[in-house]
Image (tube, rainbow, N blue to C red; front, top):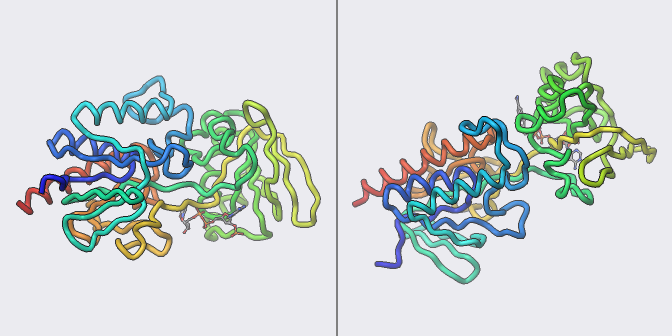
Length: 313
Ligand code: NDP
């Protein structure tokens, strides 16, 4: 059937676009369904579209803006014949081959699918929060910590991520306020102790960030405590570490996933539990969550997919 494609790639962050580069170069003519521009969770280009300077992607010694990096990934995939559709996948049927992928009522069929739909950081849902991402508000200490050398900053959250981020950030910041909404931490004991022992971390208990201040960049936040009192914190950085959510709603009941929603892949590979469907990037990785690791697993998915397709012929 001529309308059946070799492969469809769902998602266009570093994982999806690397899979596109590799499958396109392998003459598989992939269709990349890249996401919806109006969304902050499924946007084409993925989470890097919400960052500014990327200084840790190898090959860019002077750093590069997140959106420009993704534009270059896309250009490279396009050069080898990847096709792009700027829409969001609304439904999939992986119960029989060829697989079917829907964008509203439009159907696409393919012999293989690479899922690279990514994850999103949970946010506080405060006014101007999205505008200030990359301008003081961040969801990634590894990526942005270095920009806050000698500055006073805050981290929101009381889980392992928040403490890991806060601890990492003390390498750069003069002081880290850890804003915790309850009177106890959710984090493991060993991580809690790490926070208590670090002189640069001050825990602000029973408090929530309720207002973000600053025009072009963050200049402070208002904290509201459970007793209703408020106070200002003059921080230039706010790291939100209240958890992540993989973009897997459409795969519920279709692909094996952990309770947390992350797709499960066979160890050391990108194979899901459905033969011919592969998963790469943050949708199946809650540990590393870096552009470079996502790109690496996108490459793995493309190679797994190409070899699997060959084995079917
Ligand atoms: P968690 O769900 O464990 O913790 C989320 C934290 O954010 C909780 O303290 C929660 O508060 C708080 N929170 C949630 N929503 C809000 C909100 N709207 N405003 C303020 N605070 C909020 O997520 P993590 O990302 O920390 O961890 C995810 C998983 O990854 C865990 O299993 C963790 O153990 C693991 N992990 C392990 C690490 C390690 O071992 N080194 C490092 C990082 C993660 P509350 O407690 O009140 O619900």
